Length: 222
Length: 345
Image (cartoon, rainbow over all chains, first blue to last red; front, side, top):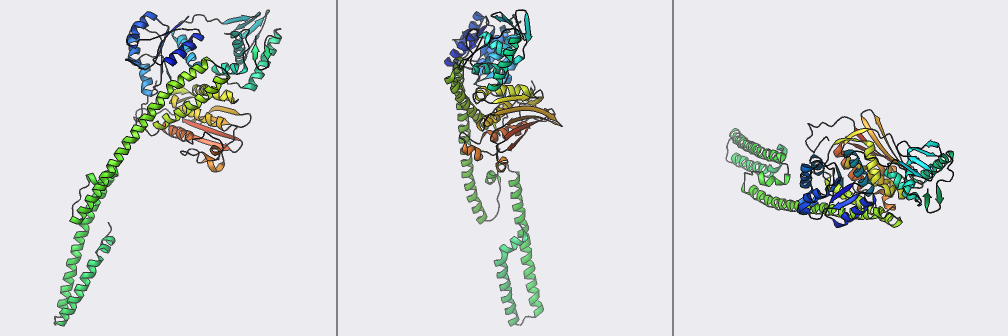
């Protein structure tokens, strides 16, 4: 499990970030005493640092410099300061990314995972999912069942991926649409219906007739 | 100062001289001085008078020309009284002293107002920055607990965020210390950022989004552009009709790369389309639908001007509105432009 060290002084944001990152499968440690952040950092040995700039007793830029002196850990600045000078400063001091408040959760998670992917060796994320005898290969977009397999479009693959991640639970259409948007697939209600129908037809071809269940007002389930 | 104006000022004096000359002429004739001698005296009189006027005219004209050139050289015209040197008659000096006092009080007034304006601007900007903290925590809290109610809150909080951004970008307009960072950026990246920012608004308003041809690279400031695109999108959402569709596509022709954002909304009247970039212009659309400040497109236009982008609006009432951003394809001339922090990353 990747460990993320949060250096942020706003209690509310810190709490929500902790919940968000825990839900996304990261371990979270928050800095409490800003005068000895570096000591804390050494104790924690995190895989990634989220760093605010305006801090009591200390400044994000100087913390970044101190961390860079001892470690190559990826650092993402999360700050309300939005001038180009601050951004430039952040990158020149060795920051890996710069996100301005107010940010939203999917963007933050996407940037964290892309920085982690860029800076650490790929540690074999689970790329083949299976459920009820149906296997979904994320890398090649292929779904297979009982020796038969069929290729899916990117959109269909993402829909099925989202359903696989929530096995046994109904996923509402809204959640599916939002999920697709986070992968830059700009779909709307009507298009989603079309895609689900097409996905069902493809599943039928590999003799999985009723793999996706529908419940009115609840959504879809595998 | 023109000669005619000078002579006009001297009319009473000229009339006085003419009547005195007339009296002298009558008197000299009466005491039997010959006509030749009389005329000689009168001619000498008027030659001297004309000479005096000429000298006076040219010296006055020179003085006034000097003052005019002093004024022309001044950056702040109201500082004139502080730098001008006025020589001359006591009466003129008195007028000048009065003017100087008036201008001095004006200068103080201007300085005080400028200070007030700066203070106010600083306060508003600070305030806007501070609001970002609670907005961030509300956004995260809602996204950690997504349901129908929090989705509604997210929608509203996005609205607040948009208004806040307007305040911050408005403050940047026409600012001396330009705050942008020019780098090469893909249209697709800009559009994806903007769409992800407006995600909840677009999804919950059931807007179908179509993107195409965005694989072009432009030199610009990504943050400003995302703000501009978001303003255009939020207009499209505000003025949507049944089955709303938003098309975003890029194209390249001649020397420009274009990004067009087109909706199938209520459109803009022909009579109003020329004024959409005016500050505070809301038009008939803004009056019939609430939440229109008339500032969005004005700020967009200002930012586009700073970045060298042509922004253009086309529309047909009840059919569509399309906003096109045209980027110059030539690279920015970094050496010759030192007005901003132009940095290539």
